[in-house]
Image (cartoon, rainbow, N blue to C red; front, top):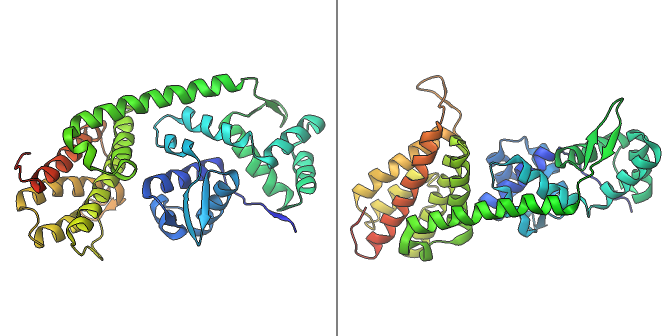
Length: 315
């Protein structure tokens, strides 16, 4: 039986894998909505990410399958490329493709030989385009003259150095967020609240305001979901940060003052995430300064919510 082969670009694989890291276990429809990819495109990218070993799929739900995935939440493209490079170095279709490319110096011939050798269920051109995208994005192959490609001369050590630098950045950002949260750091979910805040801080440091807001907004929404579950508040159908906080206040668990703080968090997140605003006829531009400030307001809001639950009215 032929082995399925899924066509997608390296960028699409990275995007859907990042989405699963951000959302947690999710189905393809939620991931397509989150990434703003067409459903067929998202489906194929998810299947390829699973084939690469980045994700796993069970009963239509996708989850991360590789500890390196969490480092994809970075503003640094070179770190994403290094992670993909490490991944494809153990991906049979790429390994065979590169061997055949070196033997033939022709990408179409190499793709055809790879298809036959591995009995891949895909057209030669689809296989060629996908493997070249993975290889050139990750730096495993570099383009030469006359549609030729050469093996990257860097060794594994240099890739590990890049990943190590990313890991140090994550550690420093994690320490900053933990210090800002104070005692609340031990009360929030590590994967669904702390890590998105860390990712947001790294994006803010890279002056990527919009992504900083989106990541911190994910953290706040995940936090509110956990709070609602903890006190038995029904938030079914409450979409977004503001709607969830409205339910918590209506249930009598939190005062209006914290609702007003939350409104800032929710409205700025909406400005970053919802495309063109009907009131102004265009999308909002999220400045680098807003991205940096937003992270610490989000942290303050989470800390204040937990303080209120403990009977301490501190903002």
